[in-house]
Length: 578
Image 1 (cartoon, one colour):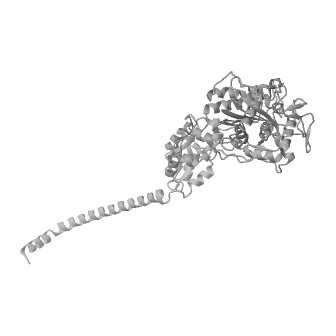
Image 2 (tube, one colour):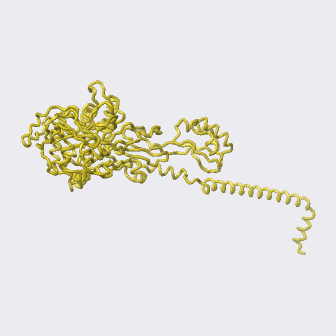
Image 3 (cartoon, rainbow, N blue to C red):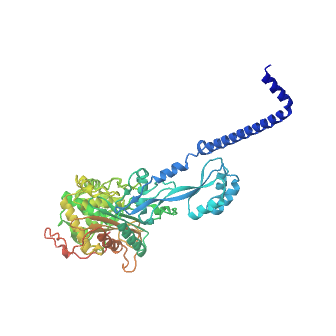
């Protein structure tokens, strides 16, 4: 044995008891340190696994991150002048992770006190579930957000959210539509352009002018109150481009609030289907002029009623004599309308109605569009009824579009709710300059006769000085107790006004309708179009023409002066628009 080893061995033996105690203490310390380290590592691993499980593996399908990202992508909607009509607001919503909640009943009790409108049993059931994510309250107010934060309930959180907001409330609700609580468009242009609005593109610019929209709605609200009408609607369209400048339907609703009355969401302009009454006589006369079966001096005898099945067709406040074509339209004679139609027949009538777009589904950037209700068998009887606006039901959009084509030298524009930039206007106008529905000459004559109706006939109360308003009125009865068309006191009615300005070169055309207006003080017991919807339309024109930049001119257009016709000799016909 080497000397050094022997010395060490002897030293260990002499001090063995002290060495053994030192080694034992060191060994114990190492074991405890190792044990604590292992426990800490296991705990950390367990927490990590749990977090991955809750946040990734068992993450709900409708996760908050994706939802928030989708909402942020929804673009603004603005009017033609850039005024915001729909935008996104940053809010916060309350959600829960039931897997983290310690006492579901206690959490449900506290949350129910803050949100008493929730169903307690449903709330408790959700909090006791095994889901990783549930909504508690969407778009909570700042006060409620603070209250939820103060509760300090584990598993109850606040998440930044997005909410669609409509700064003008109900002003353009039927056009803009609304979104559901998750920000998906469910009506109006919100639905029609949902994909585009959710993409990273520019704002959606509509053809609406919110100033004109306000003026139209304000006058309709006044008319509904004054004439005790059930509802009302109106549209203003640019004649050449087809841009819808205003579209109002009453009753309306506030898209910022939960809808309580679903009937308020009904867009009467595009979805409502109605018999249009005497406004259709414009189409009737246009067909007669275009086919050459009648001229301005053609004579039609209205002295004897016409029998259609069990109905006897008569006139109301129309001179009982022979009438020229112009007089027949200005006086709005039902009998003359039938005799005009008999000259060209049912098949020609149907052909032109198709050219006017009456028989087709309307085209517009809205999901709420109604189809025409047409005669089952388009023969003599149907032709007679259609000639004065009965037996066929269409949307106001159909009528407005057809009339726009007739007064626009025969070129029928396609209605649109999208703004047409200045640089694209002429291309759009040129796209309509093929296959006119009537000739330019027929269009000019129709405008001049409609101008006479404003000067001398049923639309006199819409004669706004300086704007050369041209128009036709109509009163369509909705029901009758005794049948026939002569009584004016025992049935409800729809009154309508279709017209535009200026007559020499139309820029804008509009349709205004009142549903079941009542006789009031100053209407002398009458409730037909000449007494209610016509003055309403006149008020609208007086307000919107300056907004639209239409210059007032006191220079009147030239008289027809055709075939020796003395148009100025026509007597006033205040209310004969049946």
